[in-house]
Image (tube, rainbow, N blue to C red):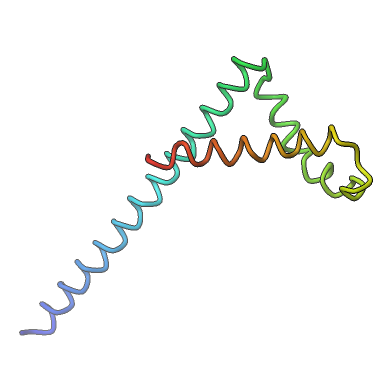
Amino acid sequence: MSVDLIILIAAIFVAWLVFTWLVKVVKASISTAITIAVIVLILQLVFGIGPQELWQQILDLPQMLFDRETPENSNDLVKGEFLLFTDFLFFSTNIFRFL
């Protein structure tokens, strides 16, 4: 075997690895985009929450989490809302795992 043939085989193998990795990344990106779109659609249709309101809440979430009192001192409504939100996120990410 010549050196050129070995280099060609190695290059084809590396190109195949990069291609399969790219397909996995695109598949994961599309799955994530579909999941986000379904969540936004459900929030808009069921609860009347628009994309702008959702985006504002996402931007405010780190500040709300770090500025809150300790869980023992906070009121039950805030804890309940946060638990409901985290349960919803867990459900929505697992329901589309088959994609």
